Length: 109
Length: 109
DNA sequence: AACTCGTATACCCATATGGACATATATCTA
DNA sequence: TAGATATATGTCCATATGGGTATACGAGTT
Image (tube, rainbow over all chains, first blue to last red; front, side, top):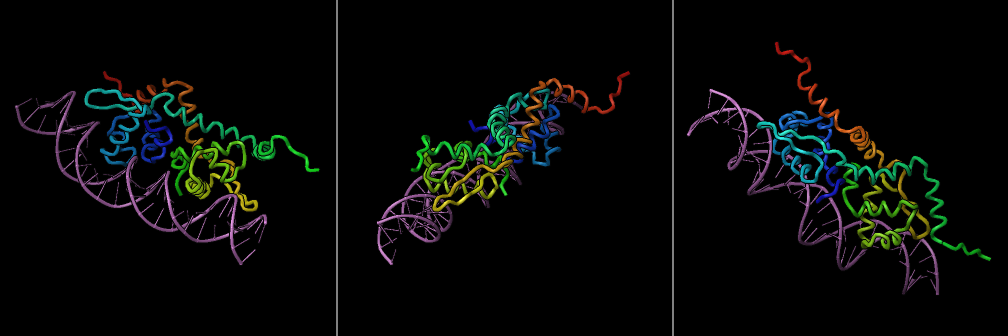
């Protein structure tokens, strides 16, 4: 099971997800929207599906894909830390640095 | 210039970033914290540095690395859409699906 | 049943990637 | 200057990955 970031690492998969943001789409649709070859689209959709990022609904001979709720949650959670981080500014970094390396600051006499 | 997601795709790089969350650290420090070999740490730090995710401050023979503010912003921004998305629920997906495919809904007489 | 459309898979190939190990470089110290 | 410490780089290798092309499969259609 490849992790979420590995998934998002590939631009083509991100394009697919972007193309799915406004709802379900068939493979042919996605091929048109992403300018990728049909086999590539299927291949990447397969990967996205296997890792639970998208779901498939079959309608006749069409395969309709859509984004699965919470699929990218893990990635988002991981990043949220850093969001908070740089929103507060980096002063705390220096503080942490100054404190942790010498737990009991020994005063040089 | 590899994009942010490519950076985060590798677990070892994420471990490094995690280890840097509480502030500056030397390479030796990072080696201890991440259980990676020193050359690997240096190699990945190099990549992180080249892509602007971390910065280097030289202090004597130590190289102190720290996370760069806003480094992961791009990734975070991209994901923020989906955050909003699944927080609202997926009803809108179906709506979008029902509307877009036929822009002018032709009433069947 | 033959045909067509929509989609998935198989196979091949070129490339990128990360680790391990050895070694180079730089800074401090004796 | 010799030696030790801290970090970087070079080389080799095994593997993963994505694309392209051809082809297989499945569901409608005639």
